[in-house]
Image (cartoon, rainbow, N blue to C red; front, side, top):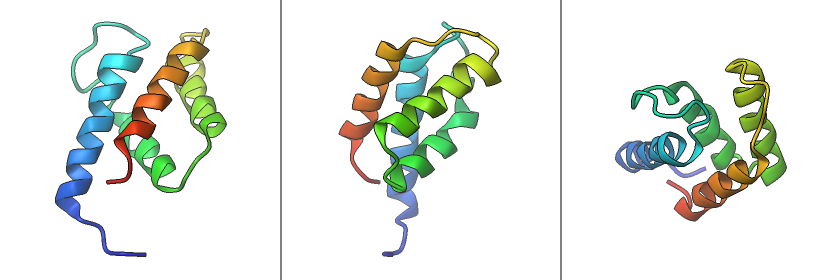
Length: 90
């Protein structure tokens, strides 16, 4: 495994954060740091080549179980995953 470029990784994680805040945002209108606790897991899953189904299941857990919202928007999750995939690797 090649060494991690820490600067590039920070930028990439910042872009993941932006997508979670702008495009996922299951609570709606939250502070900029609301979803920071999910960025690391999503980044790790992306680096480990998680499938779309695995990412969807994680977002479902985060939304419906961890946040306690009880419902899950699968279409929104698909759009978010497409945006995450478009970022490419760090």
